[in-house]
Image 1 (cartoon, helix red, strand yellow):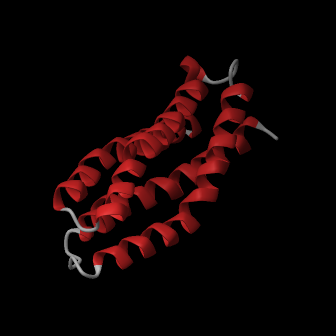
Image 2 (tube, helix red, strand yellow):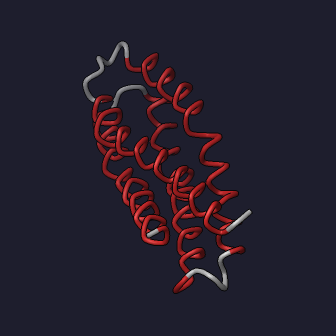
Image 3 (tube, helix red, strand yellow):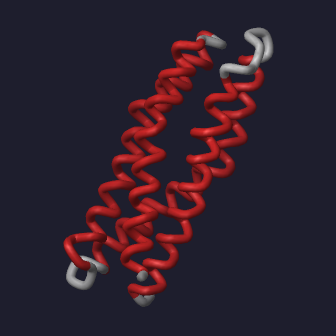
Length: 143
C-alpha cells in the first residue's frame, strides 16, 4: 500500500472518530445531566451499548493503521509525524480506559450523579483534543 493511501485511510478514520467525539462531548455527555434519575440507569446502559457499536471497531482499526503509518512513514514523514500520530492514538486509548471507562463504571454502579457526569464531560476534553490534533496533523501531512 502506498504511503499516500495509508495517510488517507488514517485521515478518514481520524475524521470519523473526531466527529464522533465532538458529538459525544457537546451533545451526549452533557445530555446525561438532563436525564431523570429514575430513567438514567436504562439510558446510560443503552448509550454505552450502542456507542460500542459505532466506536469499538473504528478505534481498533485506527490503532492498527496508526502503527502501520508510524512504521511505514518512519523515514518518509517529516519530524517523526507518524510516531506523533501513533502517540496521540495511544493517548486516546489510555484516556479512554483509565479515565472515561472508570467514570462510566461509576455511573453504571451508582446511577445518576451530577459530579460524576461533570467529571466525565470535563475529562473527555482530553480525548476530544487529542483526536482533533491527530486529524489536524494528518491533514497537514496530506497537504
